[in-house]
Length: 247
Length: 376
View (spheres, rainbow over the protein chains, first blue to last red):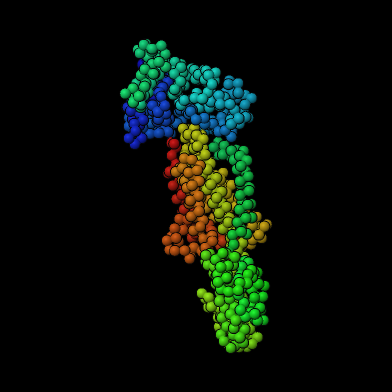
């Protein structure tokens, strides 16, 4: 593993909101091209961490480096990453083509480049017939796939997916994960948070968070062996239960 | 610029926006301009005529002959008249004493009693001055007719009306017919672009926060000024379009004169719009829902407009209120618009107001840029 480049380095990350500690001394590295899963119950601190990595929020203390850039320069980080949140965030009142054009343009692509790559992308997703359809009139599954495609349209080094599959049917989730694999195979690192435990099995490595801290970090197979469980779900129930409930 | 194109596409595609852009100026001009007037017409007058003489009838005929008064009741005594005032069936009561015509003949000094419902102080004041002016005319004619100065009547109410010793010939400049529409119209134009600029821009930004799309934009490397410009420019253009539309309606429907320079007029409006759009962005950073934004914006817009001098001259406001108007963009444009439209004032006349407005515009925009964070 020493040959592989680290694209995210986090050391002692703390994020406090008043007296509430959302992230308590997180330390982890993410390597280039891997699919890195971030697991945790609601309120475990996943979204807080991902927002810091994306430059939407500042750490209270600790060092965070994303794509070789310190978290103190969020605008530089933003140039090198893609982001898709659980709240669907393309513009409903713009067409598929217009949304792609907007985000391509924001990341500094020329109109010519955008047209070329857009045609390619829509063909690959077999979305060509939807080019002039308003996003608002597409079914949720298509929207989510499209949002992901837009998040990696500008070829970022890392793409952050914050619960990308919540509320999506199993077939679309499956297709979505195929897109994630395809993206990772292009050398784009995928950082994904989820609370679907079956999805954790698809990741190269997973991190399990509970109450703001990392309680486990390894490949799914290694974790299952170590805790002697058949699935990650079983493991999760075993180790990620909040202390307040077990007490 | 891609963001700007996106904003225009969204506006053009939104049927509500298009309707609002066209309907708001038309409705505001057609409703507010003629409706908001200080002219008091058809004052309901209750009359107790204890004299029943030709002179008293002559006075009453003059009153009801003017467009200001109509005699709606003839109560038999003061108590009944008071009851009418109290119930609101009469705005004023005029009591003509039994010795009225004797007084006019020079035997006693004739007096009239007037009671006015002064709940609305402004209308009471105006009704009072209309009445005294009718009485004064009546007086003068009698004086001239009889050639006897002693035969004048005076009204005893809260005021004394006597024959003016010096004749004052007044001529009203800039609005010679004292047409309230001319006075209101420039002000309504200011309200129009305040409402359009502040509400539409702010709601647009806060809506993106609500829907969550702003977060996607915030995570891109787009520069803050680009983002702000993309929000400001479309609404700036819409504001000017609506101003032009409103002004055209002023011409077509109310035949309002326009004495000054159109260029100066739109120039000042542009500075004002920058200030208002800056405020809209600033308020939108404080709100996370459209309701919150509306509450903040409505609160400030109301204060700005009421204190701007649209209804009451700012000069007669308390000193602290006049000082507040230093930071009230609406007050500056209100004054500028009236001066440019009605007086034909040039650049030199309004340079000070224009300068102050520019400072405010710069200050508000800086506030907005500083308060806006590409986080959420």
